[in-house]
Amino acid sequence: MYVNLYPGKQLRSTKRTVLLIGLFLVLGGGYALLREFLWMDLFREGWALASGAMVLLGLLPLAYGTDMLHFKDAFFSMTPDRIVYRLTLLGTEKVVEWQQIQELHITEYVIEFMLKGGNVTKMRLSAIQKPDVARHVSRSIHLAALEQGIMINGVKPSPTSPAMQV
Image (cartoon, rainbow, N blue to C red; front, side, top):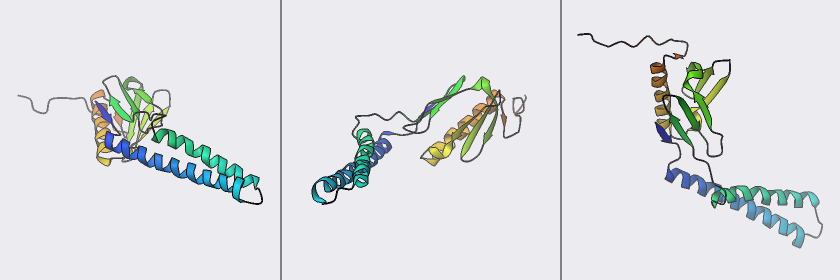
C-alpha cells in the first residue's frame, strides 16, 4: 500500500505559499538594506546585518518555491515486511520493520512503535494534513498489526479463526 500525502494540488498550494514567504522576506530585507545604505544619514550596523540576514533567510523558501531546490515526497508505504514513511516535505524517511515491533500504542494523533530493544519510534498522524488520510493510515497499520499478531494498546490479538464453522 502506498499513499502520497501531498497530492499535486496540495503541493502546488504549499509551493505558492513558500514562494510568497520567500518573496516577502527578500523584498522586505532588500528594501531595508537599501534604506540603510542609501537613504539613512546615520549607518546602523545592527539594522544592516538584520536586513542582510532577512534577505539570506528569504532565499531558501524562494529557492524551494521556484523549484531550484526540490521538496521530497511525503508518503506512507506499507508492505508485509516493513513500514516506510515521510510525513513532511523536508523530513527524513523512517523505516520500521514488522519483525522489530514489539507493541503498538495507537491514539488519534500518534502511533508509537515500541521496538525490541526498548527503542520507540513515533509517527505523528497530526502531521498528515488530511484527517481522512490520517485515519486511513492509522486503520491500515492497526489491521496489519492484528494480522502480524502484534500487541496493540496493551491488548494481545487472539489467534485468527474462522468466524463460522460448517
